[in-house]
Length: 414
Length: 86
Image 1 (tube, rainbow over the protein chains, first blue to last red):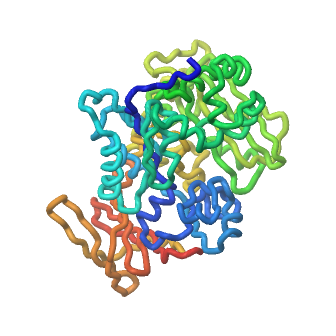
Image 2 (image 1 turned 90 degrees about the vertical axis):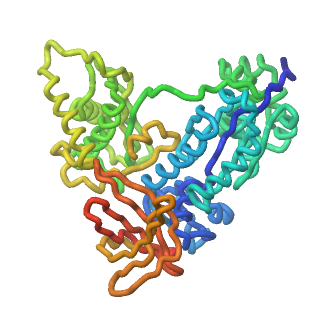
Image 3 (image 1 turned 135 degrees about the vertical axis):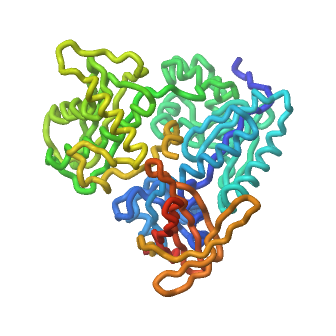
């Protein structure tokens, strides 16, 4: 078992759009091409960089850096704020290209997708030829500046590793013939799912390279290194067997916000919580779900944080229902301190087909009908046409953003 | 430099019957004509049921973001950029 490797034909393709947001900005504006460009959450010096262009990466600018630090590296760095509708449009266009090769396409994030060719295996697809064709079609059908890296393998983990080997514009196949050679030329941090903390855990188990990781026994990984079933999954993944789920059901829906000016003033914070609840409630209702739990977290200026979740014995559906319970959690903070970031999410989601009525509280059915009617008006006339009174004059607060990894709702926006 | 403008502008477009593409050809803004040399990207945005067409176009020295409202037929110049750092 220790030397077992999956000998199947590689039928999974991982496509990764290189420096996605920045590349799309350079596609839209040709005057930005060939220049160090970053897309940051805001254009202020403290804002975090979401995507540096390939040129910016070459001079040492990385994702997660602050705009101020990028400007110290190069005063010529161009800063742009995100344009989510444009990125969603590119995402849908590349998804359409992928779906012309296989019906089984799973977007992993705004800039990544997996094409599974198992359903069309009898057509004997030549994946390397298809990968080259996809690269060419992305240039002709989306834009000539759009480039992507493609990895082909027997499982999603190795396909992603293949896509990361020769960025930008790479194309690599990993199968039983070159698996060990690939591990020889990579580090533990190159493996998707291994961060610095996991690396330390592996080091403590005597694993210092991907090759050590590959040669470790299943028992060692399961009982000593990970101390859970996770060890077995890694053992299988490293050998090219599929151990990851392709898609996950929605378990929670959440929104978060970074405050421009940290504050502990409830009068300033309550409208923000309301807007987060309205955006969260819109997504919840659009998916036809109801929630039974609310969770909130706060990061404070003194670098501490606090969070609490509450499970309710009633259904939460309207923005007001969500807001009321979020406000209860907000009020139960042990200490009111200046907040820098906060988030709210709802969980324990069920289908909205049998809502439970409360015998002791006011009739909520009217409020729910009003929420549905307000949603219909917002669908017809644009987001935030009808809003709760607390949200008046908040148009430019809590802007439209794209979550990393979150593409389930993307077609709702188009 | 990237500047928000949000002004109505005069636009001459070219319609290509094969493929049904419309591309801006010339813009008149502040009394000056700008000949479009390239369309970088075109996409649609939705606001409720209203759909707007966004054209990212440029001349040799300036890039423009134009919004076309197919209901009113207005063209709005949303942003201008020279492609340099602020």
